[in-house]
Length: 222
Image (cartoon, rainbow, N blue to C red; front, side, top):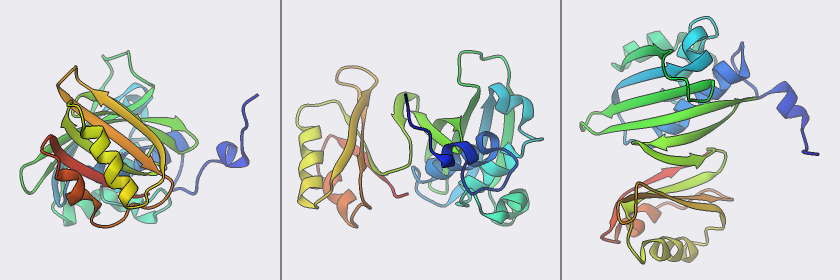
């Protein structure tokens, strides 16, 4: 029998009304924003399943936008996220997609663009009780929860890259909790996702980027 805590039943501290439709949505967007260098200039949300059907009534739209703005699940500013985004010059859109059926019921695609013209797409799923997972980055299938500090290295699928990553982390005393590699295909673009028990040290990203096959490094601190 699996263990269920009282927090799984009650859900997280949050701006309501729904842990799946608001807290989970805010958590997805909050992690997504950390994957692209600020400042963001525009964000487009595509919603699927029940997100697409009820996003206005359940406040999913405000929660998603609040997460992109950096608000935690219990930040009361989520209620005013539309006005705050406009004040900050962040363009945003919401598009429900009720045609795609082969997705988790609470799924969102987030397309972000920053001032440097860089674009990133992230797909997240809200799992209930405020929990979520990121399942796609720039079209590559991945899987991580955002509950741990994480290093996300985008690299070519070549021998020695993973060894370089683990060596740098070891030199900085990073204790690896989980490590997974996702790739488009043999020799193609790969994403190494390493989740740590503690916060990641400053200055680790430049050392990771020293490998010529590593294209980008993103650090996600909880």
